[in-house]
Length: 89
Image (cartoon, rainbow, N blue to C red; front, side):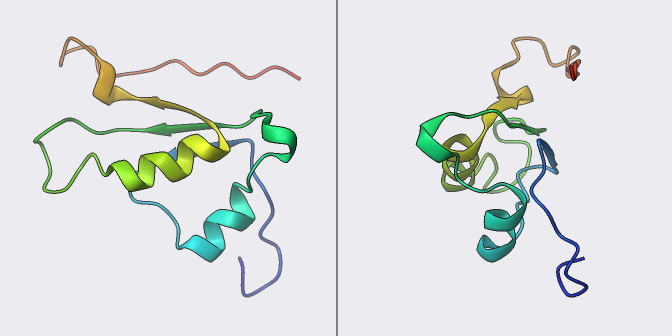
């Protein structure tokens, strides 16, 4: 999409087990908010000790700087590893 010039900022980014786009792409799809006001959301699916090097806090920090980050990492019950996301106009 970037090569075709059609990559634009998103309001919701689902991050696969903390895999994030390269820095240049991250700035395009999830730019830093103007005036520090976050309106976008990012969600990642991860669990401490499940995968090597994940959760990756430097990645989470980049996401938190741009959006409200929700993660399965903070779940108390491993059987409750889903999240509902609601979108309003």
